[in-house]
Structures are given as C-alpha cells and as structure tokens.
Length: 230
Image 1 (cartoon, rainbow, N blue to C red):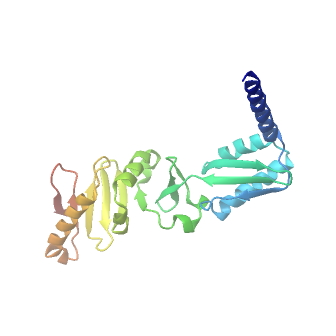
Image 2 (image 1 turned 90 degrees about the vertical axis):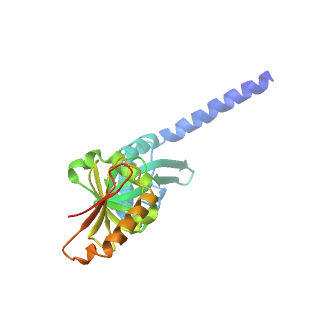
Image 3 (image 1 turned 60 degrees about the vertical axis):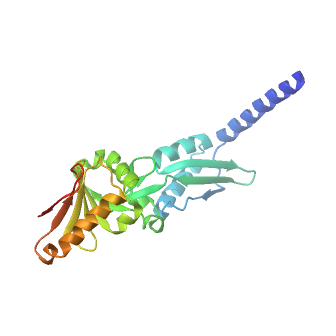
C-alpha cells in the first residue's frame, strides 16, 4: 500500500513536470489553428498574425495563451496540444447573445464587442435592438433583462429601442404607428404582449385608420395598460 502511494505521488510529480515543460516550450512555425465558427475571417486573420509574431519572437506557449486572451477578449478558451510534428491550437469563442446598434455584439460574458469580430452567418439571426448612446456604457443590466424576459418570437414582431432604464419601446413591425412601452425592470412576458395586441386590435378598428396618428400602449402602470395617441 505504501509503495503504491509513493508511486502515485511520483507519477503526479512527473506529469506536472511534463506539463510545465510543454508550456515552457517555445512556439515553432509548424502549428495548426482550429477556429470556432463564431470567429470572423478578420478575427481569424488577426489571431494568425499574432501567432506568427510569437513564432518569430520565440515566445513560450504559456505567454502566448496569456497574450491571446488579453488581446482577443471574445476568446473564451484556448486549448493547446503539443505534438512531435506540430502544435494544435483550438480556440473557443464566447457566445454572441444579441446585436446592439447594428455595430456591436453582446456576448455571454456580459459585455459588448465589435460586430466585425464575429462571423456574419453565425450572428445574422440574433435578436437586435437599439440602445441610446448616453446609456450604452451602463446598459449590461438592461440588455440581460431583455434577453431573459422577452419571448423569442417577439423579436420578429417588434423593433426594440432602449431610451433609458425607465423607457423601452417596442414598435410593431407590421404597423409602425403602434408601440408598446415598458420599463427596464418589469416583467416582459408573452401574456403582457398578448394584452397589448388586444389593445392594438381595438384601436385598429377605428383610430389607426388615421394615417397621421400613432398610438402607444404604456405598460408601466400596475395592473393595467394605458393607451394614448401621440
């Protein structure tokens, strides 16, 4: 029993030593990168150029991992397999959650990144909404709330504009003269929007025939919806 424990101990030390040696090994010019599908061609090119620079500077694998994560914040995980013939690098991206202001992508880590970092074919179908520039730096909570609360089918029915934490406007895509207003901290259930659709139907019978008028269903009041013309 004692001999077995000693053997296990020295085996563990050996494995740790091997792992340390591998990460201390300098990057060589024979490497293969397995890119996540989320990464755009531009993003892949930037990463590849950085890896080539690391080869020229003979940097260690451990320093390369650190630098890649610091430079490319959309990368979630980096796995490196050191083989006798080459080095295989597998890159996993953070998952995009939605598109903001057409030019930004909100990722699962909770922050906004440039849209160009992600492959268009992978993010084209994501929810998209507009956030006022003055609250954009502090919009993480509101974005997360919308993603958690708004039922997915509603993104096809409404365009979303966040003015501030008190005013989120959902404008009907089928008739832009009708909008729903909600607050950033209230429940945004499918039932709420079903009630708003009923309000819209009632208004449509008469008032929305006026091409110059627009109507709002304001849901920020407790237990009822206030509809008014703007």
